[in-house]
Image (cartoon, rainbow, N blue to C red; front, side):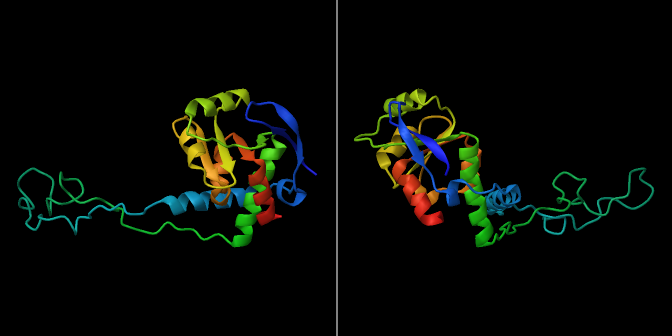
Amino acid sequence: MPTVGLFNKEGQKVGDIQLSENVFGVEVNQYALHQVVVAQLANKRQGTQSAKTRAEVSGGGIKPWRQKGTGRARQGSTRSPQWIHGGIVFAPKPRDYRVSIPKSMRRVAMLSALTSKVVDNNMIVLESLEMSVPKTKEMVKMLNALEVKKSLIVVADSDENVYKSARNIEGITVLPVNNINVYDLLKFEKLIVTKDAVSKIEEVYA
């Protein structure tokens, strides 16, 4: 069974914790990871970009000058793409970028992302992470003790004090366990997760 160190908020190792082999010890599927990340980024796109073609811009109904005899190039409209205020060639139009991924592939990708953190020694389990009041200084002190800079912190439940303590720290993001996703797991170098959050992850994915 995979085993990682268990730390307290002071950065001291207080023991080890055994992780579920079905969640943190699976074979890493690179293809599934790639497909899910591509889909996740595509689904974030609004698809509202729009520009007008030469058929949609106003004006340009009259030929600007006669066809022959002026010495200038022939022109049929002042709204051709080469003109200022002309239409856009292959103008972008609103579209849906959504990509559908099978539930089984999303599951494989999530397990692969979690396993990769353990394999690369980039997962830190905390005994607990509780704060009575929001205190950025306390959070910075904990991260320095753990020697962590860019990290995703996963807590068991939404904790406003923890979130507010970390929101002004560059490279740090806090997510409740039910909001974790493959892209964020791969985006951040380190994964800091509370012991309670590990139990919830194993409960859902084991």
